[in-house]
Image (cartoon, rainbow, N blue to C red; front, side, top):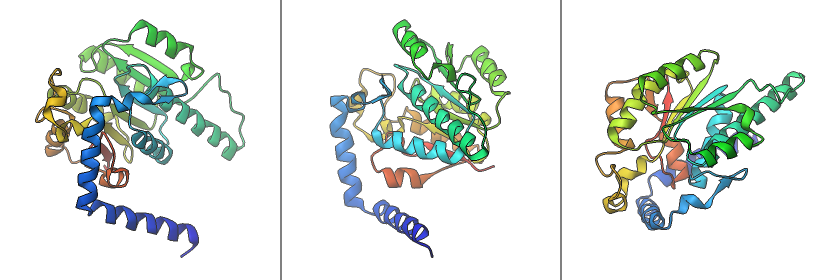
Amino acid sequence: MDEIKKFFQNVTNNIETMSQDTELADVTSKWINGIIPHQYTHNFTWLGRPIIQFPQDIQAMQEVIWKVRPDLIIETGIAHGGSLIFSASMLAMLEYCDAVENGTVLDPKQPKRKVLGIDIDIREHNKSAINAHPMANRIELMQGSSTDANIVDAVYTFAKSFQKVLVILDSNHTHEHVLNELKAYAPLVSTGSYCIVFDTAIEDVGDSEFADRPWGKGNNPKTAVWEYLKSNNAFEIDSEIENKLLITVAPDGYLKRKI
């Protein structure tokens, strides 16, 4: 076994060991519950825009995008646009690497890979900042409910021009809404790619943390994932991702399309 294979075998063993460490799981859970009142996820930016994610999930997203190499990323939920900028920057790097590997000339003004962001309320100051960003020519915005039939139809029409699709769901976190998003957008995901459902961790933290929200324990993205998988065998939970992250807002939320 060469050195790099040996390295990654050790990584696999480390992940397996961590996944069986119940004391570590308890510490992780306590830490996650402890940082929620401090709005920890608001502390981070990507290329200047608030991304509102755990750094661990940002790292996981980088690995997933590099492995899948999608040419379209569909995101529900925009907020300040940091996640769209992150996805766009990853697609830009993929195109650069393709150009280097193939010996072709890269034209940054005519990107082939795109990000489509959908939100029921794209606030003007966020829209202006996204459109003014250097990554803007890779980003398309749609305003409206992600589960509205007209929006879903428009997304499917847009997606026809792309070969490999990755989906990220991060808008309204109620069970019903996320389940409807899964039914609408998961079929667009290419085989071997992912539908990533964020904030499934709502099921695992104190219910009082979301007293002012319509979601909570028993009514959240994780319960929607569980319900969706009961009747859909095209996807499986990629547990290795959450096992190696430990700290994630998306336990049971990294769904890999296997067929």
